[in-house]
Amino acid sequence: MFLPLFRYIGRRISEAESRLLGVKPPDVVTRVPKSFRGRGWKATECRTFLLYYLPLLHGILPDKYLVHALLLSKAMRLLLADEISQADIEIADNLLGLYWRLTEDYYGLKHCKVNVHLLGHLSHYVKLFGPLWTHSAFAFEDAIGGLVKKSHGTHDIANQIVTSFILQWRLHVQRKLTQGPLILKSFVDQLDTKSRSTQRCTQLSQSLAGVGVAKTISLDMEDESILKPLLEKNSVVINAYGTVKLWPKMILQDKVTIYSQASKRVTKRNSYTVTFVDPERPTCVRYGRVQKFVCCPPDTPDSVNAAIVQELKVHRCMELEALCFPSDIRCLSELVCCDFVSVVGELSKLAIPVEHIMAKCFDISTVNMCVITQMVCHSEVLK
Picture 1 (cartoon, rainbow, N blue to C red):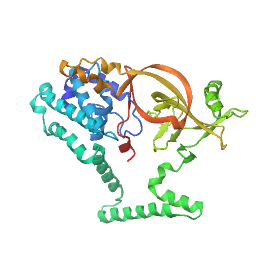
Picture 2: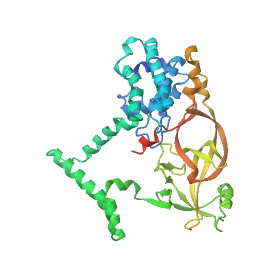
Picture 3: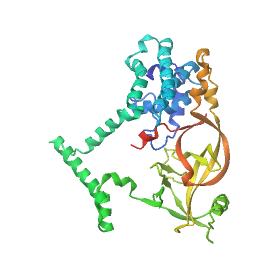
Picture 4: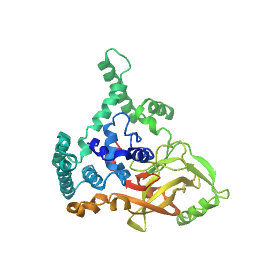
């Protein structure tokens, strides 16, 4: 479906590729961007390109072809949402119908293959079974990969898989039932492979956990002045040494892991660009990049868990709004572009309670542009 699209990029394929390879996706995206001209893309890479990377082609791909691809992107965003209204399904159906009709005009009849035809049936199946992620093939493909890892020899593979699965299931049940000494429970936790990713979590509150090894550091004057209003609001005073605990990342109540820029171990990912809420204006969504997670004062019952955030000044996506929409679909321009915002500058740094972070975002920052969009389908990400 993307092959004819790339043909219209022409000699600027290297420029488009340079933009793509410069993007650092969040950790929930399983694969980092790769070259257009290498080996074929996996299905998940095509999905990521469709949902997030299309703005990178602004100024490279002729406007009408980019607008055409954005029709499909918006329709898929609607059908992949966690909650879908009847109106959303109707809008998605109209967008898919328009995409299907324009495909022949733009690319020729030879590219109107069965996959393009099947797009017209997606809305019907969403009405029957719910959002697309509830009956997607990606989960089954992941499960097959898990089965392959349960085989460790070349003989009697089926029996190996069944034995390994039953053993893992029993360990998982035993982990929940273990009431003995802490050392015994810890041993069972280590045997249960599903628990390994959260072994180094420290529960900080009912809805928050710190991940990794916390460091005790002394605040500089800038960070201390940023934290002061939040601490005063919670009647907390920084100790005489100005020390706090610094966490590299935290897990929120909805099991989403947010990194900070202070975490230096992850260099090819950006999982620190977030949306957060202003308690004084709960309907106003704000954007920022988490620089540090701090616990102040450390190791006390009244500690405040705060995120020092560089707030971003955003505007409706100027790159996509500048597109020349065909006259017959110009009325759809705002609908198609509304999921993306442009970063036009930085505002002041501020300290917020970590609980005020809403979600991580997809930050499409390159030398040429800085565009942010919210993640699609939070429920599928957590599978």
